[in-house]
Image 1 (cartoon, one colour):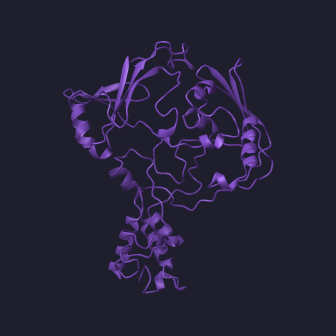
Image 2 (cartoon, helix red, strand yellow):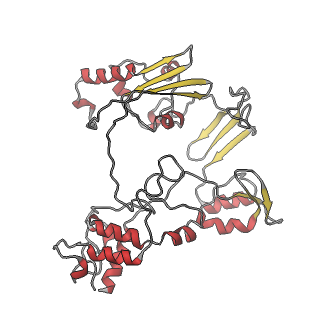
Image 3 (cartoon, helix red, strand yellow):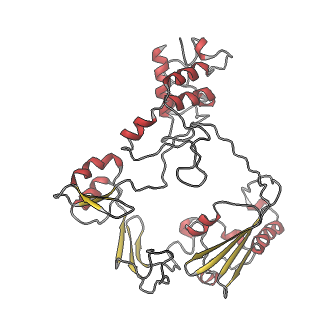
Length: 381
């Protein structure tokens, strides 16, 4: 039975996709009870954007997704468009944009400011062949394939750099825009005025060996180093720098690189439990609890999921795989972002006794007998 138990653990790990989330079951409640109106003023690219959220006091059911616009009456499609247009007001003279949201929506400012739904000049967009505001034709312009978008390779920006050229899949080049609109910093010491660099070229070089050779030769000024290759770079680091203060310390007089260590990012490494794997998958072996595989619904048993959460050595993973440069989390929100709670739900803990306990409570073969008392299940005493 030992062979069976360890094959089950190994097989389970094979069907996980990356690492460190979904260790605790989550409950999402989509109920809105806020009863206040909130207005946010945001300065962006020389404009003041007014975002007004007026939530409904009662919960509303999630809308049903539409898979085919052809199944929706034309008058309904037109009315939807009119409703959306009525909720958006802009004032060119005051340089404001007002969105009247039906309910609170936390990501709205991020969506507006990070490119996902950035406001663009409508007159310019129409000139490029985009939607002209006619509610009878909006469906034709809805969610185009990227390459079919009128602005796939066009830009109407106001940033500190101008697009010089773009070679898809190869490189993209920018030149400094000396007429950049932000002449005064948003905060003391903040960026303003023309950019420091005259020109920036961003090269797409996926293969690490090629990128490393270019870096060594001085053909790159900045290079992303995957953690598994950090040991190749470390001996060549001349200075280690604090990304906050900018202060640097010489660690190797003969080195050629400057390392900013511990720079935080919003990236995450996750694994998710597949509750119903396709029977033809090669990752579940025989597809049965016979010592050579696991059933497709192996992870549907909550005790199996809890067992894996308890038998995973988080500290060792962070030390050996992430090279000590990672923080464990207990849910989808990473610290120190708003909403992160280090105590709720409790942080998963590496505990082999708990791991064994949960495996013994599982009932993968669904015969009503806990695995700890069933020689034909995932665990045998």
